[in-house]
Image 1 (cartoon, one colour):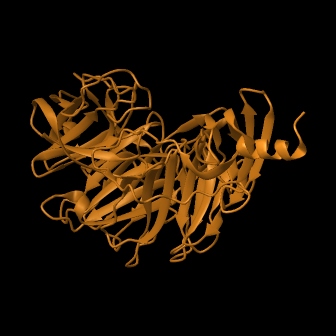
Image 2 (cartoon, one colour):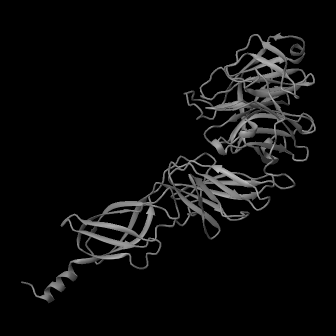
Length: 504
């Protein structure tokens, strides 16, 4: 039998200390966009639960050990004496849908065969991070996810960790005009969504950055200056009458407004009254089919009808019909010339309903060309393309892209000043807002490099689904919307006036 002294000596010789030296998230692999840049030294200092439990099992004796420690401060209480041997470990820090700390999991093995062993835990998470820079923020931002969660302030940022798959609405009140800015998010693990309230000088950009362990998606929430508000609540003045229930484009000639219905409807265009929405004249485009008519464009002599709606992203029959205005004004049936085209950057034509970036609902005529604006379902941006305005078969040339923070449904240009209006909506369920982008002062027809102001114009519950826009030379104009039918709710098609004279 060993003496007490011998037992103590034996224990000293065969026991070491496990020291938790750090926690690092496993490297996150991401397919970066072409314009992303690597910022490897820019890491958010993650905040963990104030206490976690590391469960340790000896694979030799099957004995279990437990180490409780604060992962935010490893200077104390993060070590444990253990007999030499082989071990497995597991750590699980769980949380609710929205948390003030990052829930993590870690598991692995180690061999203790020396007096001190430093172990860095390789952790994983199922959470994403949302942060808001406190500059220009009036009140504590909230996340709406069944209930409202106030974000936590640390340093210069409000933050919350959110479980992957959740779809919170971020609400931020800016302190310039006191407006509430909302963003609908779909949370993915390892994503860091950082928002900055920026006073717009017309040059604000959205930047995608990759950092070491979290992919940072940084968005500037623009607050317009120079007398341009971020929201104006427009009001309908007219309800459109049947059969113009799905108005999807607007034009103005012959002293009246014209419109058409969208996919699956008749191959007809309609002149209608701005006063009561009644149909004044119907003209059939005899050699056309309304696959998915989405917008009008026009010059002095011709009207262009965009049959390029492409919700599934798989169309190979994209067409623009061109008719003479004089024929439309004097006949009830006309024959159109055809402009067929495809996008130069589309190589895949698989079916992806409302999950592709080759839908299109907006275009206008300028400089003897047609300019089209995509409706990007997957990233809320728009790409713009140019096409010849004469009949033929063409490839639409990509001009550039811009983060419009929503889905673009119509466009028009002031033929005198070159001011441009883009119409769209945010596609956020009951939180959806219609908006316009006002573009002006751009160089060399590089339309997204001039002054840019984004204005929310109201809810579809008031406006219905905004789909058509016409801009007069004095920057007043009209917006048309199509009927919304959802269960027992029916919102009629509307005609909505606007006056943006001093806002471009």
